Length: 152
Image (cartoon, rainbow, N blue to C red; front, top):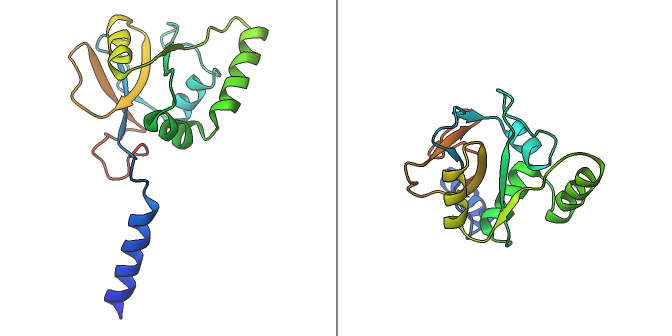
């Protein structure tokens, strides 16, 4: 009886995980002193409510130009908003304030290269080996290998 219940639970959980989901990591330039970022701070950065690092340097935000699994997963789990809603928010903030939109790039390679050459940049990419010019930071003090990491 318990085995049947356990098997049912495992089956339901397996079906609820999107087959195209992958682990997403947050990267910054290797010279950026940031080691961890909270989900709230990350959300605020990507919806233009936070534009400077704790030390006062301007954040150079990088986002994906194309819609892909990584972007969809990031928006759903961190921003909790659709692309259209985020875009409208950015347009309003650009018109009203002195806010600059994120650099928008087409590939993971372009994003990693941008972050590698811009000390105050932040971006998200799929988990893989990163060059030494960028570093992966923890999210809510969790590494991407932790089972409770949000962006799996």
